[in-house]
Structure formats: structure tokens, C-alpha cells
Image (cartoon, rainbow, N blue to C red; front, side):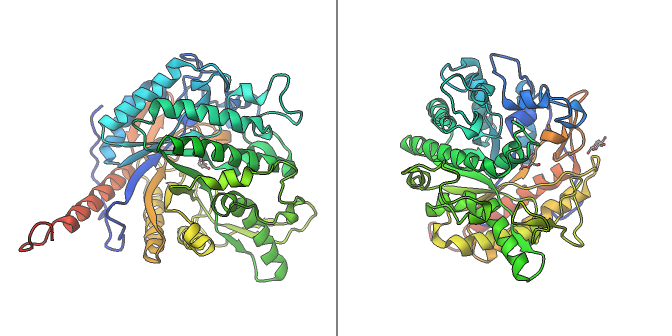
Length: 478
Ligand code: BGC
Ligand code: BGC
């Protein structure tokens, strides 16, 4: 495939987009959303294969069985990324490709795939930024054999954290010579809520607040894995979905509801990592032991490995009011007057600045450098996608505004390179790609946003060079 050339129509780099010279540009994807090839080369089933096969679970009965066929077409996808001029590529490793049952036996063909991917990325000048877990748990860990937890498997089972650590060590031993930085988990909040509380994602449990141990077991897995990665001289990040929470009014009841939601969505996953303790969860009917899941020493372990960066996935703010019925201590409220993505998510670029400045104010020196590990929107546009371009441009402005306010932000990874399998929404309805994918033919066609992003990156790089070039008349090295 040749590198696409599309003329973009906008000045790529507004002066106000003043980002650090070493700011890193990327795109993000996830294994189950793009790879396909679910039965090939010894891959075991994941909870998403099982869930997607349930009638009614995914829109139009779609599955990730083929998705973007990236498993076979990755050279073409790397060429597309090279055409963008990216610094890095965030992708995820499919655990069931590497350990088909999630424990024990390693599948050499699975590891070999990621080995080739990493080599080809490096050859194309892209730094690989792998995520070890983006929701496709090996099915073997969901339905544990005798001796597993009575409460059920998956992330309800403490043992899954230890299996994740084993998997991390074996992958790091294979790829750590070429991959400097690792993301342990993707969005433990979203996985807990959709997968275990509401049941709209795999594994489809509807436990509501009884899902809270899933938060702790994921964070424990992060801590165990982080220690193993750092022992090997590797850098560790985690990618959390965070949202600035706005109270619907300044009434005491609405403020309390906003505080409760902020605790559940943001602090539950950030306080233990950065402060070594859980926030006050009494509004959710549990003490700091999360229904007995937390054991002595766990929190020390979770906070022990310093993060080299906090990955932040930002899509929208959340507006919250006091609940009108018993159950949860909050209710969602509409954000008035905001334009919406195809998903119906409000488009509020300044929410990104608000979130980043809020993180810095809350955690101070405990906050590591931040990388935006996902940001983007689904639209119903075709190849001409001004709404996506405007979404990205305005969010980058907000990011630059946060940098101007002193937040240390090191990079930006757009979600996503390709239209892909958008979980419960299936293949066609929610398209997030800079590149359009025709799922009948697997033809990739770059959208206008692809050219826009490419030109933005090139302009930033030119400015970077201009700034680092010595002024005429100055001696070298001065
Ligand atoms: C739209 C499709 C359209 C395709 C190609 C996508 O973003 O969702 O309906 O056919 O682009 O233009
Ligand atoms: C997830 C992605 C998903 C995106 C858009 C994020 O929560 O990490 O896997 O495709 O949002 O819904």
C-alpha cells in the first residue's frame, strides 16, 4: 500500500498550540477491536468471544471474529501509521493469544505475532506502547476449574491478578528488549461498570455495587505487574478513563451526588495508585476494604511501583444530580447545549483542561506526567469528517491550555486509527477511525481527519526543529 496523500484544507498548527518540543503523537487501538483471527494460530477464546455470541448482546449480532482483520493486515496498518508521521502506537496484546487458557501453557505463535508487530513498528520509526489488558480476558479465567473462587471467576477472583502477573512477566521477557514503556490495564472503571455491574460488556455480570471487588483485583494486578516490569528496567503506566464531574446545581444534595460520582469514577482508581489508599466509599455501602477484597499489604503494593506516566482517556465530562430514587447516591443529568457525537456523548473540549488541571490540583507532586492515551469521537460522517477534525482540534487546544496552566502532559494518542469493533455497538454504528474501514472488503480509506492529523504532526515537528536550531551567529553548543 502506498502512503495516502490527501490535501488538507486547514492551517495545521495554530500558534496557540504551544506544546513541549518532545511532545509525542500517536494513535490507539485494542486487540479485540481490530485483530480478528480469533481461531487462528492457537488463540484461546476470550470473554468477548463468548459474550458476543450471546443473542442480543452486541448490536446486529456482530462479533470481533474478523473485525479489521489486522492480524493479517498489520503491515498495511503500520504503513498508514507511518504515513501519519507518528511517534508512537498504543495497541493491546490479546492475552488469550499468548496464554490460550490464561494460565500456564504459552502459545509460541501468539507471542511471535507481537514480536513481528514490534519489530515492524520499530522499523517504521514508531515506538510501541502496548497495553497488557484491554478487556479480552481468557475465557479460561472466567470459568475457573475447581479450586477457583466461590464468587465466580474473572476479575471477581483475586487469583486473576496473580495470573495477570505471570502473563506480564512472560511477555516482558520476550518483548522488553525493544519495548521501553508498558501500560498495564485499560480503563479498569469502565471494565468494572460495563462488564460486572451493568452487564452491557463481557463478561455480562449485573452485580451493581457488588462488582466493587473487581476494582481492587484489577488494581492489585496492576501493582503485581508493575513490580515485575520495573524489576526488568521497564517503565509502567496505566490508562484510566477519567471524567470531570460537574454538579447540576450548587444545592448541597447535588454537590454531594457529584462528589460521590467523582469518588466512584475517578478517585477509586487514582487515589490507591498515587496516594496508597482508597477514598471514602461509605456512600456506596462499603468501607475501605471493598467488600472484603482488600488484604493487608495490597495497597502498599499498588502504590509501590511509581508510575512513569498516568494515561488518561478522555471523552466527556459528567453532570450529576441528587438521586430521585433509592439505590445509587447519584443520578446522571444532561449537559445542556453541548453538541453530541454519534454515540450521543456531549462534546465539551474544555472538560479536558478542567480534568487535567483538576488532577494536578488534587494530587500535586504525587501526579506523574500525563499522557492522553485516548481521545476521539464517533461520527456518522463519510470520508469528509469536519466534525471529527473539529473535535480533535478543540481538544488539543484544551490540552495546550492545561499545559499553559502548568500541567505536565507528554503526549496525545487519538482513538482510533481505524473504524473498528466498538464493543456492544458492533462494527458499523460507531466509527471512530481516522481511516474508514469497509468491513465487507477490508478496504482502508483515510478520511480528511487523517490528512489533518498528519499535517498537524508535521507542523509541530517543523516548529520543534526550528526552535532547536541555533540562531545565526551563535556558537555551536551555546
Ligand atoms: C459512515 C458510512 C459511510 C463511510 C464511507 C462512515 O463513516 O459511517 O456510512 O459509508 O463512512 O463514507
Ligand atoms: C475504550 C475503547 C473504546 C472507546 C470508545 C474507551 O472507553 O478504551 O476500547 O472503543 O472508549 O467507546
